[in-house]
Image (cartoon, rainbow, N blue to C red; front, side, top):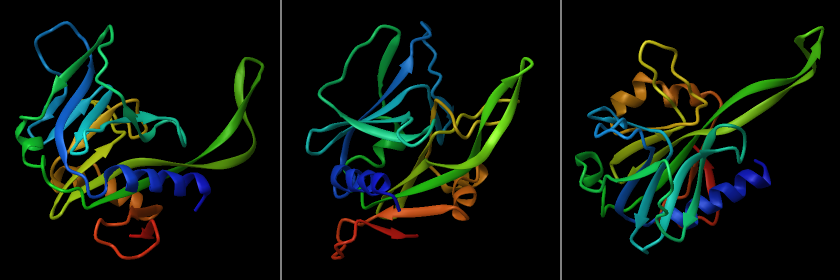
Length: 213
């Protein structure tokens, strides 16, 4: 594991493990309509921008797609406050039934499901882009499996497209609240043959910050 990955896990542990969610917000592009685009189904939420969680220590944590490892993976940062921005609307989901079931429950574990691929430099020759050089392996944190004791949700850089091919490396977040949804989009299956490492649980006595799943 690289130093960068270790730091990523340490940040996850220190920020989330043992904490409780008390408020939930989605940041969405403002389509200037009363309709909400985030509800893909009763158990799947589709979010353009970010998921913001207020934890029981009053910290605001923004979960987002970013390029910390490669575009696009799951990243996060602490916010000083909820910021109103032009063209973006902030929607409270705290009383949504899916989230209401999880608020005030302790986050016991977060499993990071990594995806991998290969890239190759492209060079323009006679107005065509031609691959050149060795292929390089790319890995990114595709999905978080967030656990609250026996309850689990999945937050993924996934965009479900009606009538089109779904995008698994997307500038988009999808939250799946059931294992059936996770299995349908094969989040664990696609990651299981690559790399699956988990942050330590809140009650763990080991000094290690990560372990193999």
